Image (tube, rainbow, N blue to C red; front, side):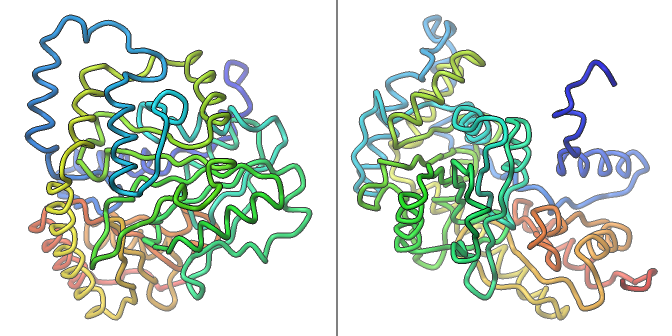
Length: 392
């Protein structure tokens, strides 16, 4: 169609919007669907954060445009959070930038860094938006292989010189979506060393950095000595503070990369509503007790779902981060066919692993972001399902 660019028309439909459409169609038929496909927190934002937003909404000065880079209170809160939580010192003016959610920031950073035809190392399996953003920026996604046998750490040794030719940027994501993989700081150190050697910039998506269990504390890539020379890190309040719909996040680290991103953003948007930024600052300045309470809820849900999956003969590891379970599909199924069976026979939506890249085939991702009673109902349905089709 002549009215639409080749980049847009050649882009596959966004996976989760497709699931939403199918879910809506089934619900219109009166079918009760339990959605374990998308990672959108079901619990409310903390009361003290909501209260701060209410207060700020009533102030006329907050109804004007935000500074392009975000309000100083929020950027100072991000810097203070990094100092307390990671021991990392940041300049709020040059090393912190407010985002309208980290998803937007990642997409705009890619556009700010690469030229048409340049490559970006994209985790495989990984968040589908990475490849979409590279495509829309006229770039080339280069698979950064992650393997279960190696704990889903980057397999840099599998990359060839041809893979790295014209490649400018490496994307990382830990705790990982979809796998729930977690790492120690040494993995980031290896990534920084590799990036220096091959003249790459690094962007770490740390959206699930505070969603952790069993005493595990996710590191920041900026804790690695010299990381600021080549790396930025994205953060979000969506998962840790149940503020997904508020659309507020940040990027921190390398000044030049942040400056380039700020130029793109200042031509595309005018930052987030000031009231939301100030409420988000209150969240980051808190003692994180609400985050710990959320994590306990997710941990209880995870234990019940893991127990049920194992009882069904489905292999799944116990993650130390995110609210996802990455499970192997039963023998004889593909990711897609097993996900379709769960929808057709149990009215339960899960995400086929193939949606996250070629290395996601053979797995499904289940989200724990539904109330316990709905999770329990999903388990009952999954156990009772009857197979109509012959597994592929």
